Length: 252
Image (cartoon, rainbow, N blue to C red; front, top):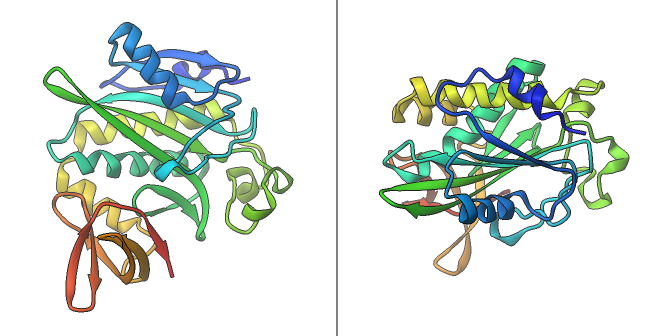
């Protein structure tokens, strides 16, 4: 069971304190957030579960989580940046910084916001948004493989995914780990500007100057991932042209 009181005891955030909702089992924490928001219009909602049975990732992909072993949660975040894409940059930075501070493990980011360890996926992020009154609200779903064993992973993911326990060879306490991530998010909100966020994201990207495949104007094409621009978009060099891109990529 995930102990929400232990999470709260380890949080040192100044920008936000969540109204925490714990569900032993649910279909989707992102879906739960929207339902709670419709009921309450509260902008400080947080949902976490020990067993998500219908989680979703980017582009309607399925996010698989192992009951009682992963971190599966969603929360509402008020608009921070004028440039919308920067909200998709600050979240993975918060995760890798929080994980490093709590476990010592150094992770990398794969565009747009997958978290990887030696090119194996460890965490994923799904961000949805709505405009409410004069600002945007972001529903941020996070799935982190924490205490999974190799036997917990489906056959098709055993060579592509990893957990913190598999890296450290010991179990990781989920509550202070998640608190560490939120503390890092709070620090970035308080202290970071656009340039700092962009530079830190690039510093921790796993595939600068690597060839990638992406879908552009309805067709799959290849190019070299170069950087992110001042709007928080990927810049991919395709032949002699630089393409500004928001979608998913595949590494080649």
